[in-house]
Image (cartoon, rainbow, N blue to C red; front, side):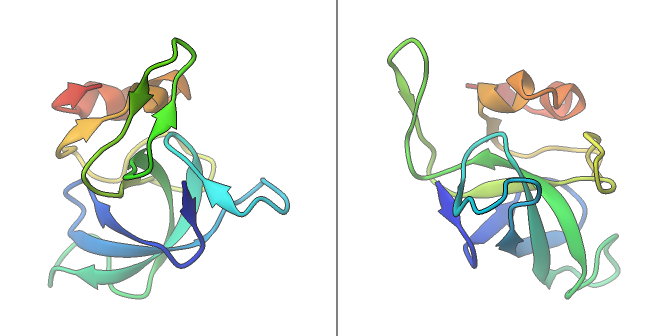
Length: 124
């Protein structure tokens, strides 16, 4: 459960390190986003000579959250940090980077982000 102005780590190799959540597109008045949802982010920290620059706005998908999420089978999943993967363009389900770092929640694959799931090291 992430809300507006939340800072997230970036779990791909685009060169961005920290992003800030600035919106939840196509969700109306919704105030919170969870694992597997698409959000709008602005880059706050990036490596020099990276694919992305500080201040650019992108769509991203949430891959990990500190707040636990209940699954249909009654189990809960939670991670040590809040992280996202930057998407190629608006409406796309393709990642901008070519590698995904850290674990990935199963909900991301269930939402149709199969390319991201195939690049991930491990899926929980």
